[in-house]
Length: 185
Length: 194
Image (tube, rainbow over all chains, first blue to last red):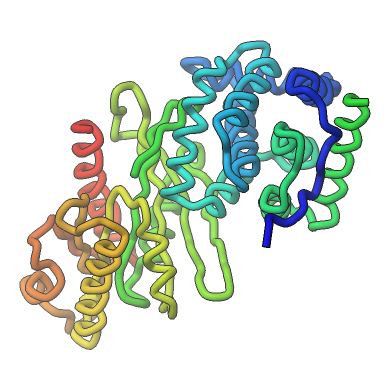
């Protein structure tokens, strides 16, 4: 038996076009784009002035990694995700640091388990940001052009920690996929 | 197997509380959680499946300083209660940077203590580790109960390696932080060496 069919398979597009679509959808909400930039800058500051937004950004990076790597995490996907986050944060955080961090997070999953890490990182997401964060994580998971069944299961598990039903998570996935398709057309 | 979070500038270490059912592992965690300042700890999380219930939280001990400029975050784990499946205990040991064995000081729990230590050794071996190669301390819990075994008797039964050991009464909090600090020193020494 082969792998189960992906939950989302975006229209085939060259990597540069897919990357542009991902950026466009992630940045289309001005408040979210600003929060990403501020969160990254605060996370990188020696002494963060706004610990909440720094923690949210750290949680987004870890949750994005945890979901996107649920079906494996190829070097190309790691690089692509690091470049996307670097661009989204207006280079407040460097892609090489992010790539290094993803490798360390892989060690973290090996030691602590994906489930416990999902639960822990979810705890840093404020209730008012649940929908937006889930959308962002879903988008990150689609950075390779599809959302596989294991990634979908991880998103559903994340949703349960954030108080979202499987149907609500599915609605977020469909919304993000539709926006990405709109950009790819 | 510690890992570094470069965004939070933290080294993350996994500490596992191990021991027989009802020895006070969860009580240890709950006491530490209740006495740690809110801004230095994450949420206490319980992950339940059909066969196991893993309890954990993480915290930044403010008095431990840093290692090469990185703060050290401890993730305290246990599988509380009498877990039927040994696989759950094995899983929680995976990747541990340090282990605290919680022994029950009551004479009636001697066999359970010995079985649990042997189980710990076996499970570590199965996951490629060894008790004598890991930061490891022993806590003799429930010292507040009447008619408990002497510390010498307990040492002879559950601490043959002669690792640092601590008396505790987790229900009142006595000895709980001493035990954790004892292990923390060993973990930090190893981290600094690596």
